Image 1 (cartoon, rainbow, N blue to C red):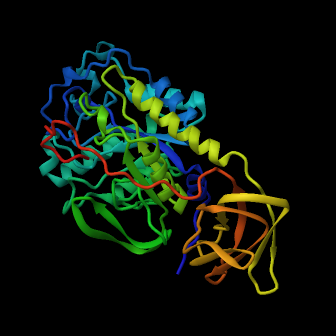
Image 2 (cartoon, rainbow, N blue to C red):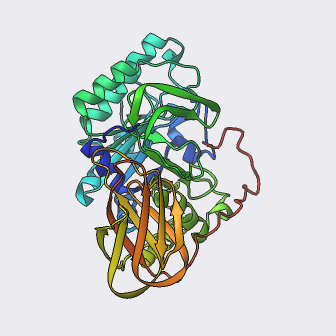
Amino acid sequence: MTTRPTPTQLAWQRDGFALFLHFGVNTFNGREWSDGTLDPTTFAPTDLDARQWVRTAVEAGAGYVVLTAKHHDGFCLWPTATTTYSVASSPWRDGEGDVVAELAEACREADIGLGLYLSPWDRNAACYEDPEAYDAFYLEQLTELCTKYGPLHELWFDGAGSEGRTYDWAAVTAVIAEHQPDAMVFNMGAPTIRWVGNEDGLATDPCWYTVDSTGISIYDDGAAALDRARYLPPECDAPIRRHWFWQPDDLHTLKSREHLLAIWYRSLGLGAGLLLNVPPDRTGRIDPADRARLLEFTAEVERRFSRPFIPLLTTAPDGGVEARFTKPVVLDHLELTEELTDGQFISGHEILADGEVIASGRTVGVRRVHAFPPVEVTKLSLRLAGPGGRLTGLSGFFTGHGAAPALEEQPRSATEKFDDPVH
């Protein structure tokens, strides 16, 4: 069974790659999850530059960014009317600053999407234990974010810490519908995109877009049932280091270029989205080492996939697809794209050269990338399974690499002093 995507869902899927920006009072206190009691005056970036964040995203080829406007500790990166636990109580910009506003302006200037993370769980709000009072509090915060900063590309609702808690999602959905109807909604309430189910950035094959439930968090093996099957393409999130907030002692956990490429093949390459966390440091800028590694990784993606060989696609007599190139070409990668306007249908596929299968898999979706040993071809034959499945495109590449990179074992921090969960 499949359902139809909206045009905004398809546009979001084509964006594919984005940057996550975990930033807040935790950044300045060596914490991942804090309990809402950290002193707001410790939030003191010395050179905050949201344009540098956005410039980094643009140079990396990202379609949007997502900022932790409020993490689980309840500290707000905008001067909210709901609480004093915000940037208004910090020395930054003499208490007159607004991180969300600065990022929104930078995104508008660069024509890149702005996403905001608003944690449902709030460890600072005194009203949190009163569901009715907290729902009103949370709706006020959400309304501020939805009305003061222009169009939002995505609203990110993290289920961590909220296991077993029920919020007024109908009211949340109404606020979004009124003020930000085109924003993608991540995983909770009335979602339009879903969490892939891990924090390693990894999708699986098959990567189905129509589901009847979503995962809650890495701390809950259960699933939240949907009212019906919905088209919810997955977003894979992963940090560029071990931790989500910038930490001073975990530079050695910075993922290698090869590991980031391995994530790329297993997220974007399987038809999911990739939200890679590259957090600002205590200056308020993206750490030079993180920025350099990010751009090293994305430059290699660009090198591999910037010069496609485009064949002519025709329907074969047996109902399959033939791809003919204008001359013999040597390929070691293929990218397939499915027609998704009416939904996702392809459930299996094989690609043959001279009668030999060179690549195969299950779903295709918005993009499916295959790597294989080099082969010289003029024609490829494709067999598709799944009634109604159609390709809209096939591109061939010669990258010099006949296999996807392997995932590497990831190091822990030298002194693992964080008592809180990693995300």
